[in-house]
Amino acid sequence: MAETKPTATASVKATSVQAKKSGNAISWLAPVICIIAGYAIWRYLMGSPDGFKNPATEGWFWPEHKNPKDAFHRIYEGGIIVPLLIGMFLMVITFSIERYMTIRKALGSGSIADFIRKVQYHLANKNVDAALSECDKQRGSVANVMKAGLRRYKEMISEPTMNTDQKVFAIQKEVEEATALELPMLQKNLVFLSTITSVGTLIALLGTVMGMIRSFQALGEEGGAGAAGQLAVGISEALYNTALGIGTSAFALIMYNVFTTKIDAITYGIDESGFTLTQSFASLYK
Image 1 (tube, rainbow, N blue to C red):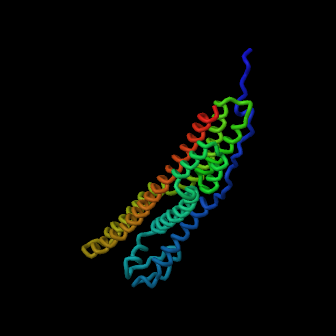
Image 2 (cartoon, helix red, strand yellow):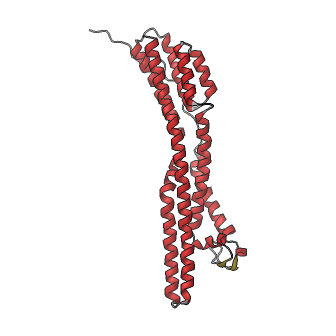
Image 3 (spheres, rainbow, N blue to C red):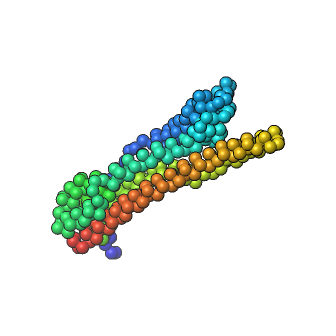
């Protein structure tokens, strides 16, 4: 019977990569706070009685103030959809700041390309410790993956029971497991930006349609040429919903594309790191 070669998983200890611990409170807490803040802005700033010639004295949740004094207070008459749109805009700002901080940390210090070249230089000179030191200096997601792979790389150099292919497989597996832990942290909460990009305009159109319905209803009830002015005002107020929705969606789309571009750069760096480690080991430790 042919002798069975030891596998990488049987001869090598389990991965040293540890799952990252991070709270997910912002994912559900931020939308609630933003919607409440959006209502407060709409109700107490845009809907301030001082901004209307004929303020209402009743209706705590949605007072029907008339004749706004300026454009800012005229947005209030866009209806109950307006605070939702304001809340969505605040969500875009909140998650953009959160993603910027996370991705900025993931990029680490210095250029990813320069970091990989330095590691390649140290590996070519069989100086794994110097390569690990470069990872400590860079401190980004690419460095985290590279560091996990380098630790296994160093173990494989002195591993006597495995052949080169098995050692390369063990390094590759370590890199893949480290990558699987890094990438979700980068993509987390981007779903909010992508969702607002699609839904923001639709909600704005809903507010516009509701405003148009109210305008034509008023025209039908009052009739005559005297209602034409009220119809024009109603249409202009309804279009505030569209303006808010389009602006929010455009901002969300821009931020989403900015962050996905940066994540793609990090992902490319991670892929190049894995290729660097496996190719280096295969060529130097045959």
